[in-house]
Image 1: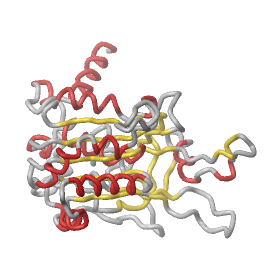
Image 2: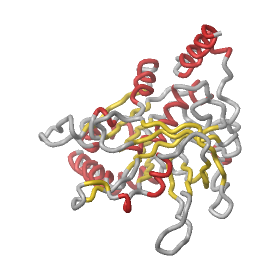
Image 3: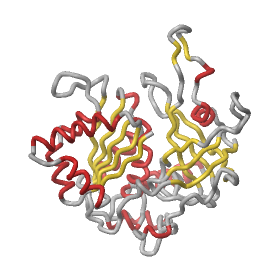
Length: 339
């Protein structure tokens, strides 16, 4: 029995990143095509705000796992939540989480915190009954105490990172349509720029395109290009999955990391996300001119540096940056979700 189980596990693992020319054994595993619109790229039926603050959904924790190494700056967890198929969402949307308890200052319930969903609509187990979040534990270092001040820790992130299997989570949403993937033209290039847990929606994209047997995966002929900025190698998120996707689909998936404490930019300073993107500025501008979509997700502090860099590149090219950006927004090629 153990041998049979191990073999089944091996098959499921291999199928997760099977190439587009599917191997024979993949016929034993159900395709991920049962949660699709008709046609699959039609976004008119995307669910939005099905569950609200006054009538939230109750999900159950399947697992909570630390996913960064010992030298990472802070703790980031991958949290899988069971919704029994009753809380559908699309890649790029967010879930609201209502932490238990009340605020000390007025006794009212804590406000909802939004988290980008870090799985495809089929969930990590591909059953369509779970969804995942990527959450960094928010702490506050007190210089006087020379320690973390528990009174100032993030209420919701600490609640989520401390959850155990079976714990209940009150949820709202799904929220947002700004980060959805454009799937009507399968040749569309995607440029995905993230800092830290801003990687979440892109993991959903990458699983949908390169790890699952979806109509979108079968059709996709473009290039998905991921830029991720973190402090060091130990803080990289989902790197094993991304490397596997790159290995299987070298012509359709690219990865570039900006490791601020390990790499230098061309000026000899720390390598931040805007510096890494700037290295490929000519190619990125060309892709955008040809209809590529560019996404930004992460802390809002990432955007001024990115926009200043793009402005400088545009000036060097003799391009009116404001007009160029207005054009991208008008054609819905510019997607931003920062917090």
